[in-house]
Length: 365
Image (cartoon, rainbow, N blue to C red; front, side, top):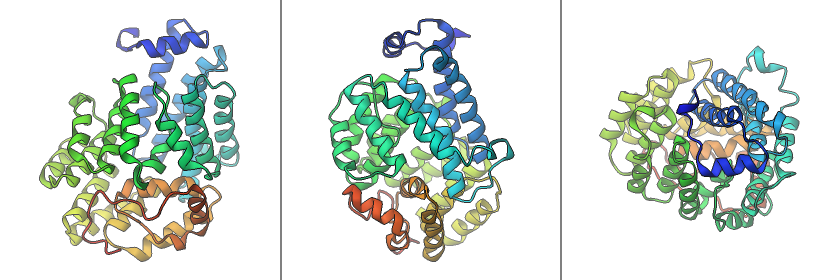
């Protein structure tokens, strides 16, 4: 079983730093990272939570031996974060996870703070400041934290910094930062898909596709293919984008999402709304993805209404930047409709509206 796990030098040194030297823990960490990545390609909220819960079970094996292993605490927080996102966006929480909704916010922040108790480098400390500020709703000083983090070299990066950097004028610098991180974890697909997304936001879809070429074709997940489709649309390769989506994505919700996006990019309103209708009929879809699709097809009233609902939730501010990232279409909603988010965003110092690497002809704002 250990033969399919790559123990690169960075992870060896990192594990040794927290006094874990046994092969079982190395394998648990690598398997946890793989499951974490797989979870983020799921289109079903329930399946994502199930895989993130499995991820945490593996991480707990490590934390029993090394409670100061910060990376494990950071990854562990994501399970509770996605429970909050689902709750904010109106997803019916599966009974297997429903009992954790009330404590999700405390658990999320507790995990992040446990990581911050043992910062293992200046880069890790800055990355944690970004993530704790973002998740905890303290966005004041976000620009400075981003700038300082991007100046760092090494293998530690923020989990949530791309939500603030890519759409709001920092994508080119953030892509340079992600190049270093990708070299640290070259066998993790998300290393390259995250870099590709930043390059696409920076206006360089050709280099985005180059980054994705580092992922072996047979190992691409739906998330990787979606990033490729975004880049190909940005590059004017709509036919190629359709080909790769239809050839690789098999998950029903992900396929409907991608087909809606591609039809909207082509300006085919009938097809886009047809695919969107099918997507909205799926009871277990990730409902935070409703908003970018509604924006892409030009339904301003509906996307404003849903954005306002998210904004009314105490942790809706975590999900709303995801809508911006998923849409890549400028302002998905009118920011005046989300006064709580608007206040946090203004505190950050970032500038609205976000960029628009993809043109959607049906969206007229």
